[in-house]
Length: 381
Image 1: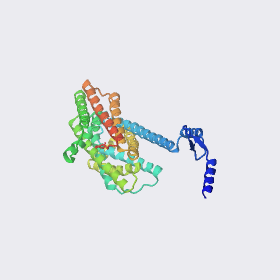
Image 2 (image 1 turned 120 degrees about the vertical axis):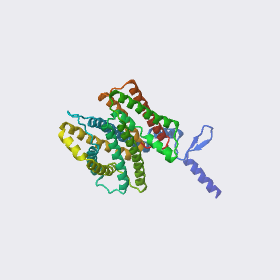
Image 3 (image 1 turned 90 degrees about the vertical axis):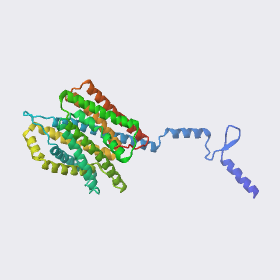
């Protein structure tokens, strides 16, 4: 038995070659491969990119293209939107009459948004599904339409576009005050400084504009503050709406968000336009001023295209991404308005713009850094 076992071991050693390990002792390679061949095989394997890394790289490229598409759409549409909004509310006919029918304009804008949402939903997702959260959509639609209306009324009552736009960039201020008074929240020194810079810079610019052309008014400031309050409500409702839909396994689609929100906006704008006699007066104004019609149509189209990209960004990316894009876009809108619309600023005015823009950029940077660290921002823009 022992002799048979010994012969079996010798046969195995004959089939498995011995490889020197550099110390004189033999090392058996179970696959019969020499060290040089093993080294070569390892090198060849390292030169071949794994399928996983290729897939990851392609996914990152696709995500980058998607992000560039969203940024380009938001910038392009809303830069023109802001320019047209200023044209609409600064329009004066030969008799000096101005367009002040904000609710009528919002009704037209909501119709254009609904048409775009229906077409987009049909093309990309097929039929429109019934929403389980119509109450939340109604609330966020109401807050959004009031925010837009108050912004338009601020412009109609004489607040300059650069002042209004910079003020809207400080929407974190009312949210911060509310959290401090009611929610017991705490903020860093940098967050206080950012809000303070935006508010101070906007106030400095507002005083400068008031001294130069008298356009800024206390009523306009009041309306823009109301618009900021509505922005805070909108942000909270949208965040809760998206989380509620995610919990029940419903994937929110961009055009569904856009459709249901604008249905609420259209209904509210229609009722208030009728109640305030803006529907008939606004219609007559548009009909009697043919040159004005093109501005209104282009304004509504830019709004529809811009909202499509906003809801696309909200659904496909983090809300912080949308906030960053829309906030930085406002800087370009302000600068374009100053240079293209003939707003003359003193040194104090430019100082105000610089301080406010610095606060905006600091806020964007801190949020982006917090996102990279996995920290959620306290304030949704």
